[in-house]
Image (cartoon, rainbow, N blue to C red; front, side, top):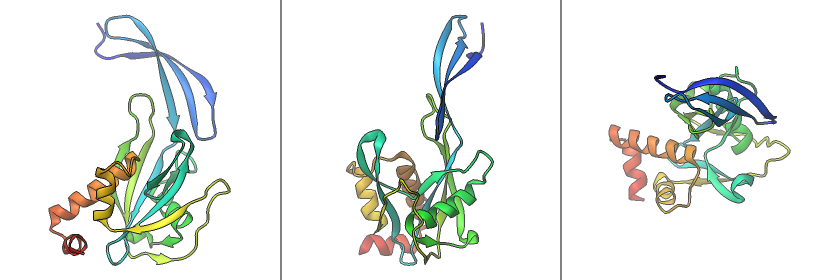
Length: 193
């Protein structure tokens, strides 16, 4: 008996602009054969941009997959599978929000896989501080509104279902947990307002 499923074959079904779709032929531990869908993604980065007063920049944009507008952390796909995610986060911050931070002020927060059942998309999430205003540089297909919120406002939106994007929820809740663990006075200041 096999210890874990073993891929026998991977067939490309669709080569897309953002993802490639494959059909994997898998031999299961009991010896049977099944077909699994696999979506290959080049990876992405997101950034949690914190203003000097502790408020957070967020982007609102239409998402075709769920036919709805979402409130999210600024994010985007890597230009290729070899682009460092820090470079991607740095670029997306300015493109989507019109704010920049020096690379030394952008630090790694966490990594996550978005949908482990059928997709290998991995997003590295960064924290950006010491922001300064520049200008948005949106792609031709992007129409993004930028808003500024307190962490408490965003936490409430997560808890009441107003924020549904997984990377955003993970980034916000990780950031909040770190601030609480460190007893960050900025968190308490924001919470009391």
